[in-house]
Amino acid sequence: MRELEFTVWELTGCPYFAKHKPVTKEGVIAFTVGAERHKVIQELLRRRGFIIEQAVNYYITYKNTVVLIKGRIDAIDPVNKIIYEIKPANLTMRGIRQLALYRDLYYLDTKQVYDIGFILYRKHGETLRLSFINNMLYKPRLLEMFNNVIEIIKHYIDRDEPPRVSCDDCKYCELRNECKPVLKYFGLNLVPLRK
Image (cartoon, rainbow, N blue to C red):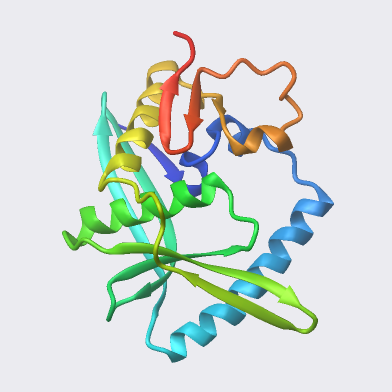
């Protein structure tokens, strides 16, 4: 049996971009700064009783291929049953898709329904200002994102290559002017563009 592994980050954007993206100096700096800010925020949350960096791993089988979907939930408030994603104040749709998929995977693992929210941060001088967003105008239906990523995984396995998905990643991709995406994220909805 063949085995594949995907991260939540890969499946909520463009898997082709995730596999082929060039590593740039700016990207490394942005990742490092973001990781440092996450650690500071997560330590504050840990002291408040939040569960930090909860691993989620979920296996599916499709056409003799075992697929692992994996990721780490930034923070869980076990008292109020809220799963949080920590993001900079300039939130993208990919962040919303990630959060929805984490909630779906956590549900599939625990059979517990959790609400979702964001902890947005902004650097102000030497301090980080945090905003907790618990009420969203639109909350994805349970398993909505999971069903979308299953379609991406099937496409990958059927064609033996990562699909090109039109989404937030396109503005960073060197192939954006010549790419022929086969799927597109419209917000949280995944739609086919061509056969």
